[in-house]
Amino acid sequence: MARVCVVGAGVVGLSTAINIQKLIPDVIVQIIADKFEVNTTSIGAGGLFRPNASHTKGVPEDVARRWARDSWKFYSEMATSDMACETGHSVSSGYIFSKEKIVNPIYESIVFNCREMSQCELTSLGITQYQYGYHITTVLTEMRRYMPWLMNKFKANGGKVEKRKIENLSELYGQFDVVVNCTGLGSRDLLDDQEIYPVRGHIIRFGFSEQRIQCLGQSPLDKAMGIHRGRYILHTKWRVCTSRRV
Ligand SMILES: Cc1cc2nc3c(=O)[nH]c(=O)nc-3n(C[C@H](O)[C@H](O)[C@H](O)COP(=O)(O)OP(=O)(O)OC[C@H]3O[C@@H](n4cnc5c(N)ncnc54)[C@H](O)[C@@H]3O)c2cc1C
Image 1: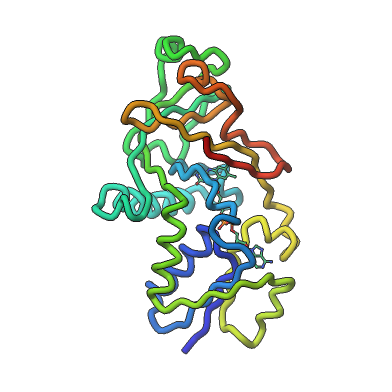
Image 2: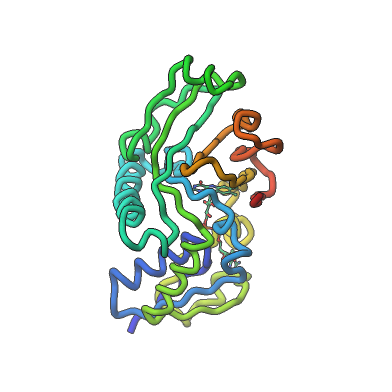
């Protein structure tokens, strides 16, 4: 029986490992990672489905669009299924604010709804720092539910897990037929991949009637919605990733 090793236990590693189990039933799949669940970047993600070409640099756009459509099929079915609560998926509406016009983003034609807001809407929300706003209805993934769900599914399918830091992929030579790299930022050290870099952001969760609101940008709705701190979803090169709950 072929042996496959997935290095990394973030959302990419877990999803990859499960898909290998699904597509190739007669393989032994093992995940090796030095950090799990709460210690990964994945656990802190906002979990908004809004893929764009900038997220997949170097990938031809038609391929990125196909990946996005395939992923949307999976996540939107989850979010509208009876399992949504268990897996941590939901349908969520909110706003994206930007100082530049967002031109033809990949998610625009895929998500449930995405439309540019009028100046009148922006003004009535008190948005003055941003010239452009978009109202979007998409899928939100609650990572603190989804990650354990993925791990349980992987183990239930017979997957094995080892906690270990890999210093060099050659350590795995002879033990596995295929090694899949899902180390995320770890690839900077493991494979000297200088193309990958961290982003900085804050996830702030708050109650607002029955509806979840996503706010992306530099806290433009803070005052309107009673938030008195911080910035959230702020992309900056070379900074440590942070997230927190309030
Ligand atoms: C604040 C914030 C908000 C975000 N919001 C969103 C969002 O709304 N939507 C979205 O799609 N994305 C979002 N992201 C991005 C998303 O979190 C990441 O793209 C995603 O989590 C990357 O997953 P990963 O599995 O590649 O990496 P990670 O979660 O970092 O997992 C990497 C794994 O590899 C392991 N590893 C690394 N090196 C080694 C080694 N040498 N040996 C053994 N194991 C190793 C680690 O231990 C870990 O298990 C956000 C990110 C941040 C920081």
